[in-house]
Every structure is written in C-alpha cells, then in structure tokens.
Length: 423
Image (cartoon, rainbow, N blue to C red; front, side, top):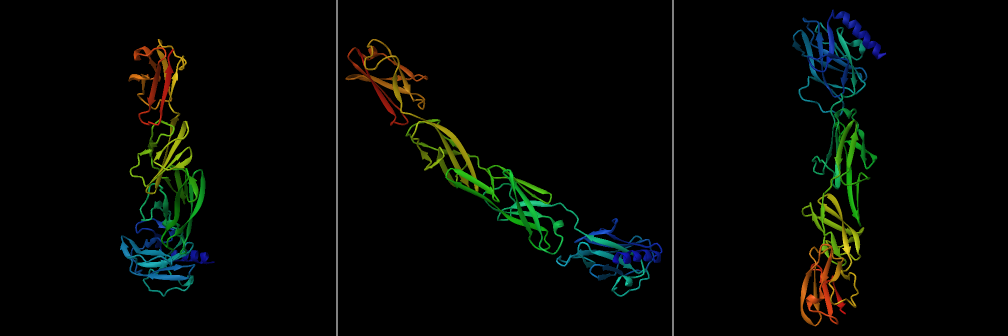
C-alpha cells in the first residue's frame, strides 16, 4: 500500500512541478540513483526549474514513519542541491560537516519532496501530507562492496609474514560486512596440511567493520618428534597455511629455521664426537637424537658398528628447525695377514698385510719391529689400506718374532697389534 502511495505522489507532483525534477545522488554532480547504501552520504538535487523559491526539502522514511526537514540548498548552475546528508544507523557516529542526518537501515524506503512555492510546510505525519511538488524515492540497500583487507597480527599488533610458535590475531577489515547494529560474525576457513577448519571472526564493535579471532600456532618437541599445529591442524615446518574469508585470501608459511649438521662421516665405536650446528646463531634450545632416541648432547658416541641416524631439533625464539645426517660407526681396527699364517711366516718373504676398519684415519701408519732388538720402523699404509713388511730389512730371520702395531691418532682406545713368528 505504501509503495502505491509513493508512486501516486511521484506522478502527481511531476504534473504540479511543470517539468521540475527531484533526484537522489551519491555526489553533487553525479548520476541519479534509486538505491542508497546504508552508512553512505548522499545529496538531493532539484533540476529543471531554474527560478524557484523552494527552500525546504522533506525526507520521509516510510518504514520508520520518521521524517527530516532540510533548508538552505546551494545553487549549482540551474540546480538546487541539498546535502551532504548522512545515512546512518542508530549505532553509527554522526560525521562532521553534514547538512542533515537520516536514520535508516537496509531495506527502508526514503521519499524526498519539495514545495516549489517556497512554503514551509509542517513535518508530515503520513504520505498524504507531503508537499505538493516534485518528489523522488530511493531504497536503502546493503553497503557498497569495498576492498577488504585480511592480516595476521602478533600480540603487539604488528603484521606478520610467517607463522612462528605463538598466538596471533586474524584481522579482517570489511566495512561492507557491517550491516546492522548488532555485533556481527564472519566465517573464516583455515587450510593447512591438506585439511581445513572453520574459525569465527567477531566484529570488534557494533559499527567497526573489523572482524577478529585468535589463532594459535603450537610447537611441541616430544622425544624425537616435532609436532606443529595451526588452530589444531597438523602442519609441517615450512608448509603454507591459507586463511580465506569473504573472498579475501592470505597465505603464510610456517616459519622454519635451516640448521645444518657438521659431523664426521666415520667414527670408531665408542669414540666421542661433537654435533655442531651451523646456520642458526645462538640457538635457544638444542635437542639431539641418535637412531630415534634422545641423547644428552652435543657430545655423543655410538655403541654399535654400522650407519646411525643423527637428528637435531633447533629452536631460536619462537621458530624451530630440524636437520639430519648419517654417521658410520666402525668396529675396532684389525691388522689382517694376506696369504700367510702369522704363527709360521716365511722369514725370507715380503709379507702382505691389510689394515681393516681404519677408513676414519686419513693417513694411517703402522709401527713394526723385531722383539728384543732394534728400534721400530714406521710404515705408511696405502689408500687401499694395505702395506708390506720385509723381515730381512728388520734384521729378522727364522725363529724371530716381528710385532706390528697400529693406534688411531684421534682415538687411542682404538689400537691393535699382531705378532708374526718367522720360520
């Protein structure tokens, strides 16, 4: 019924105005509009009637049965312009410099009318009391879509570009999503590790247009495993995590340190060595594991021969990093005869021998001598870890005993000897 009354007003007033035309605009020199976004600023313009005594403009909110009167238009060329006029909700603050303020919500219908005779009419109490002149209507609609901003803030309110361990605030600036005076909510999808979870962003104040929610990044190093979660979603260090809300997307990596292990490639069983960390200056925490078992570091030793996995978990500040390497543990070194029996070796033959499990020694040497006589001699070992001993060069003959001794220069506990009986 109200809509019918409005259109009757428009048709009737158009005849009375003799060509004058009233219209809503979002800018003084803009185009006529039939829709006004809630929270916007608008103008009402009278066109086509250069000579008029019109001073008073009435705007009536049909849905709220509420009206406002504006006087003192500005003449711009052959037009009269009323404004700027703020279209506010009950919770919006009044802006400075407004000619008038109209209270309206999305869905309301506004009617503007003017009396060309210049008469100052009383505030109408219904559609039938509108001035007998040009009129226009406009529907109040949802806010105009604007560019939205999605950020992640640290506890100090600074924007971050990666996710370290700690608590952050998801911050969405979206004034167009602030529609009513209630505290509104927005759903955010957090995607990471091939899964997703929903978070609810809550408006910080009824008219702020800013929506926020806390999100936690937890890092837990238990035993020899580092578990990282974002809002409960398991993720790996360096993985990308997506935040998606109302058409805006933010992708951030989980912070990851890049430590490197500096280790010997080979050590002897029982030999201590130090796990050194490169690439991270002054770490706050260091955890070392051998074959998946935590050990007290950074000095460690290996109890069994064979390859061993060494891993390190390094923390600096709120960021973690991992590194891994393999170390080969060697059995005790042995001196092995090649092609002869050490209990009855020929006295006039050059003896061939091998040094087994000495690959951790870059320049191995052995010492040889005749028991009971002379000084020992030093013999170099070839890259294939073989060497020769000439009994005659030692002054040894049948019935003598030759001794051969080796000691690892970096690990004296790794030593061995062999006695050779000559016949």
